[in-house]
Figure 1 (cartoon, rainbow, N blue to C red):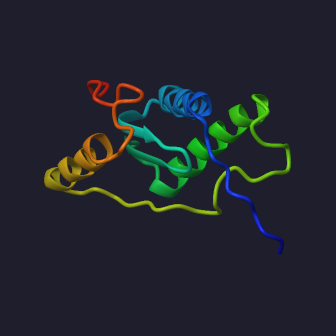
Figure 2: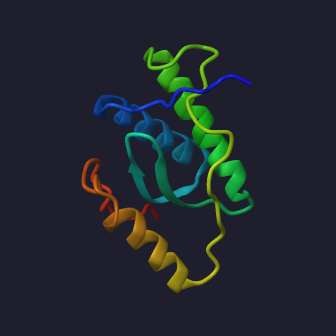
Figure 3: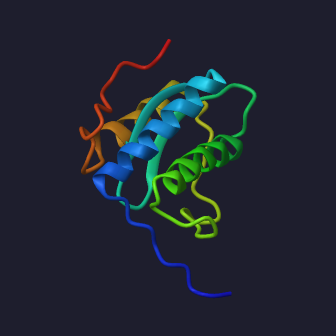
Length: 121
């Protein structure tokens, strides 16, 4: 298998990814609690009952990839993301607080997209 070059998202492309993830969450009725789109990866906390973290990640990556391709950021056959990503369930309120703090407060671009917005009801 050949080398895969890393996709680095410029700020305007980060906005595309942010909008795509927000859109899929709205479309699916998921609660997007926190989102930080960085130049080469994404951190998010999503409440999506009856969905595995893997399926949430896959759908978000799919929507974002479609929008990036429409914008000409990557070609039709070029991968935009790694094959998987890090996913986990959060079972306790303390774990949720820690996850939200990490995404909202511990990313170097945390205020780029207003990540401190209120969680959606």
